[in-house]
Amino acid sequence: MEKEVVENLWNGDRESQIQAAMKLGRLSSKQRHKLEESDVMVPLVCMLHSENYEVIEAALCALLSLSFGSERNKIRIIKSGALPVFLSLLRCHSQTVMQLTLAAMLTLSSCKANKVAIASSGAVQLLAEFVNSSGSTQSQLDAIATLYNLTTCQEIIPLIVSSGVILSLLELIHSSVKSSPLVEKAIGLLENIVSSSESALCEAASTGGTIRILVETIEDGSLLSKEHAVCILLLICQSCREKYRGLILTEGVMPGLLQLSLDGTWRAKSMARELLLLLRDCSNYSSRFKQINHELIERIMEEIEAEGEKLADTTLRLVEEMIAKLNA
Image (cartoon, helix red, strand yellow):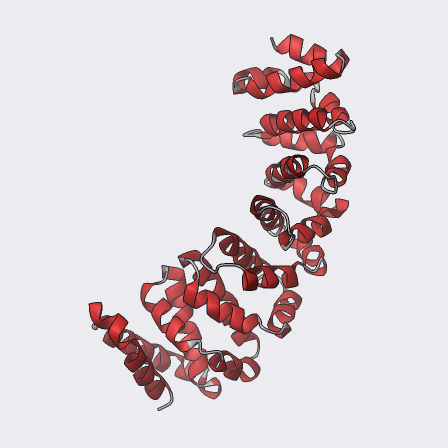
């Protein structure tokens, strides 16, 4: 069966190629492994140049099937010249083709050896355009996940920052339900970018509405979204406490921050308490006072945790007490 697939991919007519590509997708991993030395990526990539969407879809599905679980095949697909065609397909009029192409880009970007090639091909700008597009949610998720994969390579970060994706991510988070998976992925990508680039952090911090968006996410986001949001807010505050402390407090961060310091993830709790220290008093945030401030926060947290089930009914009072103690 494998020989028939290879023969039809290389020498078959259009219908034979479509059927061969579909059969390839149904092969077992062991059978697909036997095809690796037959350079089947080459005819499949050639099929991507077709003007027939059925041919393109069959080729994309076959390439996706070959790439699953095989780093070598992911590299071979890129080396077969697939990238320029992928970029062209991302602009086509078929929603199915675009989604399959994004899925392929996502899979290929998970391979370390492919990251620089993908980024330098011009893909970053196209992916950034999908982030806040009017397309499907799945397309947005795949574009965000692909960019996330690329952020693990430090030399690609400047390209990602210059693509304008920071503003797109902020607009997406602002306009979406804060507890949604889309926001969770978007704010996770935003954290990765701003934690890797000082210029990206500066851009995010100076964009109007950023602090409010982060505060809203701390209040209404999923557990992971809250973790990402408090991390970004902490980075912003650390970058210039004198400039951002008042702005953060003005947006009403305290109730959400206090709640997060109690029931967030382990990492979120730690960062929430660190941010509380920064918001207490900029002038006293030094090594001399840091331990004292940590002890103060710990005592206050213990008092709040001791409230147990009464927490929901006493949040306002606890916040008022917290602010009073922090300003003492």
